[in-house]
Length: 171
Image (tube, rainbow, N blue to C red; front, side, top):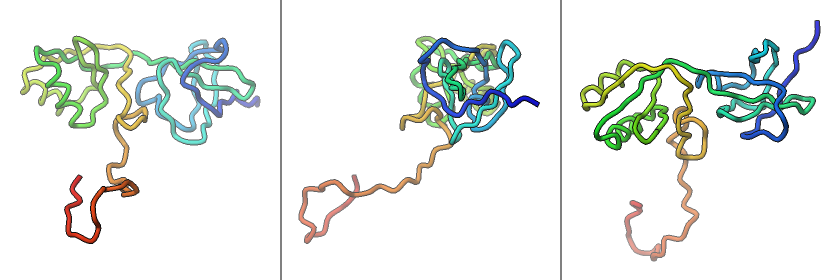
């Protein structure tokens, strides 16, 4: 039995001509260790040091230095349009829902609760099938969900006040 070509690292963009291409859904682009089948039928093992969000256009780097291009695969999505798309986007963002933001529409993964909310807000929701490349998280991570909001807030900065007097730390 021959060992599969293995990718131990990932980069956000290509450094060499690609040896192959793999198309993955949004959920499938979040992985650490998995066997993948490339578009030409070749199988590779991905064995990354930590769970990683792979972006459309990124590359998996094989142990021999070859690169495999990652592509967003077409998948079932909800297309959202509205005369007040900014307001609709706020409501979606408030729920930490992955969202692809375009000038005249938003794309979301199917969710009946979100669909009902959007209808109540007056948005038009249409089912489409296409690649999903949502915005990354606000903290520089590739995903908008799964992050911890309970991080400690260190007070290493200067407050500019006298610590001998009572004062309020709401900032």
